[in-house]
Image (cartoon, rainbow over all chains, first blue to last red; front, side, top):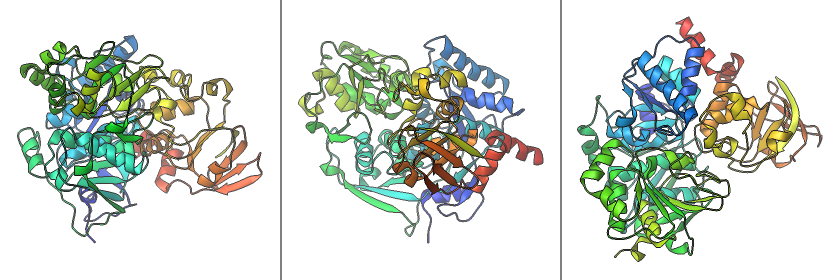
Length: 421
Length: 165
C-alpha cells in the first residue's frame, strides 16, 4: 500500500519510512507562526515555563494582523507583547505594521512557507499553505509555545479524503466556489480530524490564488489540513520567492483514501453560504431578494490580487448602491501596492468603496466594518457564524469576490452576470 | 479524578465565537474571558454556572477559530469537564494542552437534559447521570494525552522532557 502526500510529508518529518492513519507521531517543524491574538498566550506560557531560548529564530513568524493598526488600548498591549518578544529573541520574521499583511496571504507571498514543509500556526486558517504542497495545520497557543521551545509538535496521522474536480469552470466561478461546494456537500464536520486532498483536471489549471482560497477553508469542513499536489503552477509561484530549499511530494497511485468525491465544475455556478454556517450553501441564482447593508472584500480567504482584480471587473464604472458600505481590504502591503499601481484602488474609490489597510478586522467582528443589530453583510471571508461580524442578531453571507462586488452594486445578493456582461 | 456537577446542554457545532466572542480577545486574562463565556449562545450561563458544572453538547463542539481563549474561558468559569458527541480538532488539542477534561460519549449526550446532576470518573472512564440513574462508559484519552494531563499541561510536559535531554 502506498502513501498519500500528507502521509509522506509526515513520515519524512518524524524520521520514518512509512506512517499510517491513527499513528501518533512527533514531527519536526519547518516553520511556525502566531498572531496578535494567539501569540501573547504562547509568549506567556513560554516565559512561565522558564524557557530561555527559541529553537530557531529564523523559523518563527510573528504577524500582528487581527487588530492592527491597533483598534484600542487593550489590542495595542497585545501587539506590544509580540514586538517585545520579537526584539528580545531576535525573531527574524516579525512583521511591523508597514511590512505586514494578513498572515496567510503574507507568508506564502514572502516564500517563508514552502512545498514539502510541515508547518503549524496558532490560527485555524494555517491550513492555507496546503495550496503549495505543504502539510500545514492550525493549533492553539500552547502548541505554538511548545514548538517555539522544541521545534516539534505531536500529531495523530490523519486519514485522507480525496476531492476530484473535473470539467471547465464557467465565468465568475472561482476557487471559493470549489471549496464552498465541498463544505456544502460534506458539512462543517465532514472532514473532522481528516486530511483533504484536492485534485483533478480543474485544479491543474487553477491559479495559485484560487488554490490558496480552497485550502484556506479546509478547516470550515473540520479538516486537519487541505493539500493540493504541487505542479508547474506551484513551481512558478514558489521559485522566485523561496527563502529555503523545498521539495515536491506526490501521493502514490495505490495510496489509501477513506472517501473519494468527484465534482464536475462545468455545472457549478457561484455559491453563497447563508447564515449561520459555511455549509449552508446555495447557488447564487437561488438566493432571492436578500438586501445587504455591507459588502466586505478581503481576508486571508479572498484578499489577494486576483480577488481585487475580479472585484474591479465588476465595479468598473459602477456605483455602490445607496446606504451600502463596500469595504475592500488588500491582504498584504505588496498586494496593496500592486493594486495601487494597477489603478484598482482608484477604481474602487470612484465606485464608492472604501479601501482599508491590511487587517483581519471585520472578518471576526474586530473592527473596520462591524455590523449593527439586524444588519446583513455579504463577505468574501470564511465564517458566517451567528454574531461573527458584529451584533449577535446580524447576518453574514459568504461568497466569492465577484458576487460580493456585484451585490454591493445591486444592494442585494445577485449573480455577477446581472451586473456586468 | 472525579467531578460532579449540573449540566448545561447545547446542540451541534457550538463554535469558538459562541464560547468566547472575538470582541473580547483583546485580553487573554482568564477571569475576563470567563466573564464573557458562552455569552452569544446563552446569556444566562454566566449567572447560573457553579464551580464543577458540566457542559454537554452534540457534534463538533469548539469548531471555528483556534483561539485557546475558548477552553481557557470554560476552565476559568469553573466548568469541570466538557462532554460531547465529538469535538473540533483544534479545540480537542487545546483542551488537552491546557488540562481541561473532555470526553466523547455520544450515548450519554442523547439522554441528558439541562440541569441533570452528572458524575464523571475520568480514570475509570465512567459517566453517571445521577438524575436519570444511568451509567455510560467512555474511551479514555490516549496514554500520552493522559501524561500531559498528569503534569498539568503540555508546557510542563515539554519542559520536563527538555530537562531530561
